[in-house]
Length: 350
Image 1 (cartoon, rainbow, N blue to C red):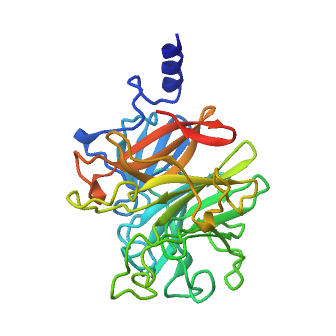
Image 2: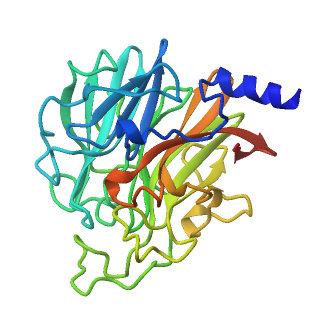
Image 3: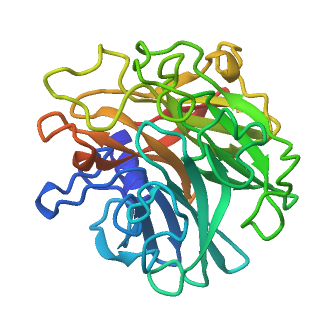
């Protein structure tokens, strides 16, 4: 009876009758990196790294996912980084308008920007690219703190119940920051006084700095492996999720020491602006973060996560590697796990 109840629960989420917690679609080459997922009507929309930001659709989280087009019709209007393949999109909807926040940058450098495109539809076609929201390294506004010490990639936008909007971003360097957005959601509330808060940081470098490291390309203090922030809300708490450790284009013959690869960590706060603390009470700015999901079984280095509400259940989704397939950037798959909460802390269900 317990098995049947569990099976019904998974099917109601559109997961799978096999109870497997992640999607694998090797035959259809359904690889994904830095996913963001929306549920609109009877359709799930998956946005991920790809030329002009790929869009896939499916009838459930378990797929099958179909590539239906891209967000942008051309390269990003931002003259930085890899404009043809923006990184780490996040998509939200408000009052019938869809907002796709994306990153342009060059790997290992923080001459970066968060851009935004809007549309009246979640699917391809009709998106208008508004360009820069915030930027670091070079360009207008990059000489204002915290843009002088941060890396403007991996955006996540939160709309609170009172209608306030916050952009959370950051990768390596000094970690994760948050700034308020204007009511139009396409610009910061202030370009000169951004009212930024520092939300999370990894104080320990995972390795020595590159000898050519400078303040723009390579951190002279070494790589501080924290990025990919996402904020969700459940029953009185805001949860700051982030990816910790090394990922992307790994060498299968020289993988990071066990525990130094990507893992998904979290802290919580009653305030969307923090401070956020982990389960032991450690501030995320001081290196805190409770591990919620890490390498296990065929899942290696999960990260790039988000949380979506499906019915009455929160679902943690992410990309992960399978070492039997490969550990290159393009080898990543989409995975997901339903969450339950124990004493106010999320637990990933297998």
